[in-house]
Length: 132
Figure (cartoon, rainbow, N blue to C red):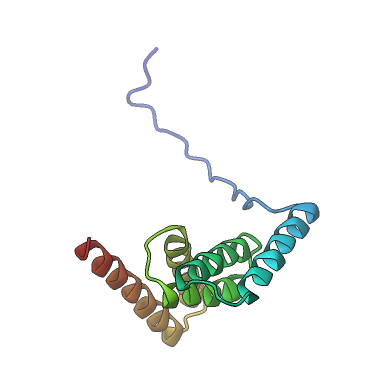
């Protein structure tokens, strides 16, 4: 009737593969990245608009699994204009992912590097929160 004192059997959860993109979706995302890069090449763009475009490119690169390139692009966006939007959140996640990789590889230098990057990101959030 009641199972208050029965020992629960825990099953190991199978690892669920991350959402993988189909070939068509990857082609579509790469096309969007090309379009955004063409927009970035235009002269006379405002700094805020450049930052937004870099952020969009970085988010798409992250979706494609291009972690290192996405980090560089999202950093460019934050260099142009500090925000705590989607690009900020994605960059923080990517830094955490790289830190976890470094921990698995037992690479203390890389762990320290990405921890300091994450600290920098937290400082950006503090700075922006205090200036509001």
